[in-house]
Amino acid sequence: MPHSPLARENCDVRTVFVEPTFESWRLQARRLLQEGAVPAEVFFQTEGTEQNFFPGLFENVTTPASLDSSASTLPKLRVPADFIALAETVADHRDERKWDLLYRVLWRITHGEPHLLSMAIDSDMRELLTMEKGVRFDSHKMKAFVRFKKIEVQAGSGITDHYVAWHCPDHPIVRRVAPFFERRFRSMNWTILTPDHSVTWNGQELVYGPGVPISQAPKADDLEALWLTYYKSTFNPARIKLKTMTKEMPTRHWRTLPETRAIQDLLRESPERLLKMFQDQPRSASEFFPKLPEGEKATLEDLRKAAAGCRACGICEKATQTIFGEGPPDAQIVLVGEQPGDQEDLEGRPFIGPAGELLNRALRDAGLNRPGLYLTNAVKHFKWTPPSDPELTSRKRIHQRPSASEIAICKPWLSAELSLLRPKVLICLGVTAGQSVLGKTVKLGEERGRFHETAWTAHTFLTTHPSAILRMMDPDLKKAEYARFVSELKTATSVLQSPSPQISA
Ligand code: URA
Image (tube, rainbow, N blue to C red; front, side, top):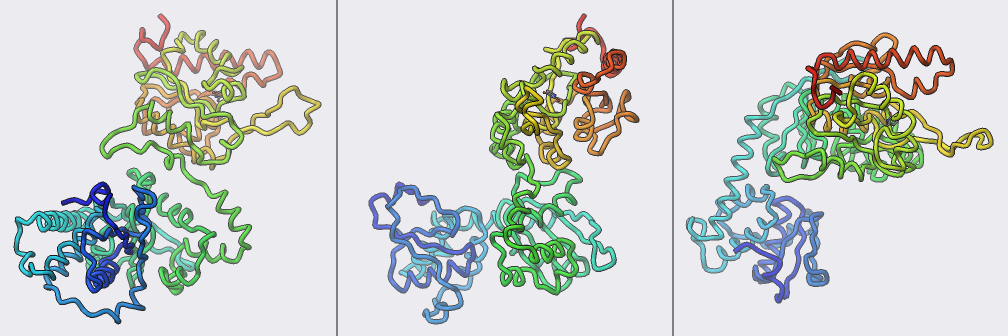
């Protein structure tokens, strides 16, 4: 019977913590058997997955004992080898109930049911065998489907190849399957990243490390970028433990991995500086994406709600709120600005301040209908600074351009919007929008007024930003620039058939 917390409401239950390994469970199970602890009185829990369903109920807690210190003092258990093999496999299943189930079966085998293992119709055995099958199938899939991407890394004064793969198994099976890849690809240096763990073969040994959150799962060609940020983001100065680090990644191996050069540099810095560096480390907006059941796709509304809580970069600290895109989800034309301004920040909508007014006029003059368009920004928070001399200005908050890393951190929101919208025409207003959408630094003078191909549409168009026109002092130049802006909006949208809801009849 599956263990539900309710089932133990009235029992004197004792929680036994185990590390997430078969060995750790085996040690605790041996102890419990020796003490005569019946399965109904024991609740196994993997360390770090604590969920206290009934606060105060599970106060009787046993923490995992060190495997080295006490394992040898316990009497050896006499259990069938088949059970050990089965338990070793089931220990890699993701379902936390596995530990209780294993203990129950172990108890029964050692308390009068020596033939339990052959009773496939027994409900405990059925459950165990299903778990075993799940782990085996998942391991098989991992062996068959892991695909490596070659990445060139700096090694000493030369360049060497490293092969990286991302895989998302159903169960934490990296340690189980890694030896297979070691045998198969002994002559290559490779790393497999999964949400639970990572493993690297450095030509001499397998080195295990932390996993990569599923939110950072690489899209098609992003594996290299993920690989580089992976070590940066998982390196936490507050937890620098040289001993553990050298154990996980032997120092002789540091020389050959580019990311370990960064670690050496970092270790030379003072702890405060390290902390500051890591607080400044780029993160990604994707960490704040909505967590949806597997297979479910986020809608624009889901994204908008999730973006409201985005704290991926420092801009949010001083901004009032996240300003997400606005417009019909089936809009054929999408316009991307830089970031919300002062008024947008206060009122919660894009392009409603002075730049928005100019944009509205230009859209009308270009024969476009704003309510039919989707308007958004490359960066979703207002970045500002107080005026250096408050006497000289009535403005309390002076706009600041977002940095390249802030644009990159925020980009997942824009990418997600564009992937859902799939616009026919995508208009970038100014260099920040251009940089985010085209994925490179853009030179407006050279690249405006024509189409560029992007992942979202071949009709990606670059033009100026309305604020740039507002800032122009010379009235003639300003007029000419406005006319050029309108003309470019017309060019950009000329590829669409008229009339449409986006284009005024
Ligand atoms: N400027 C922008 O780029 N976007 C806005 O939403 C407002 C001003």
